[in-house]
Image (cartoon, rainbow, N blue to C red; front, side):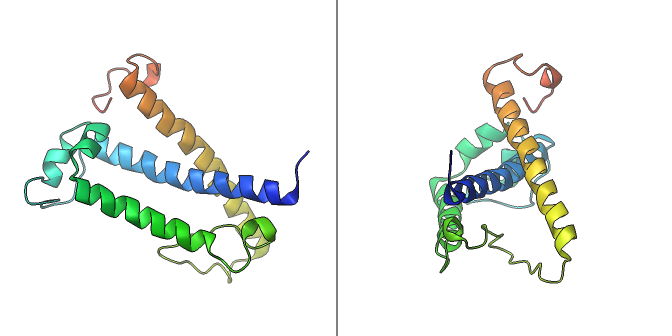
Length: 152
């Protein structure tokens, strides 16, 4: 049906999407709770003003230069993970966390495997969560558990 290279590519994609979804879900919850950094994001946009908005509206209010910095950082991280001497589709290691780099060499193999499985499972749940959040914002009543929540 598929090759080892295809499986590795799909697993890497799942892992990357899981990590992004975990960050997005956490960020959405923090933003929705009104938690924010002190100070100004730019000369005319404060973190507090963004915190008063719904998370997707806050993204729209971020200046274009800020969005470019975020997307540029993502691009660099992607470039680093994809530019390994032996690509993961050819037997190299799956993508790791780029920043901060974490050394897992001292972790016992069975413990590391269990934690990697937990990361994938938590990421799968986070993918469902962030899509539920986006659905709740764009289609009122589509996620009954979120009806009446001020973040949605």
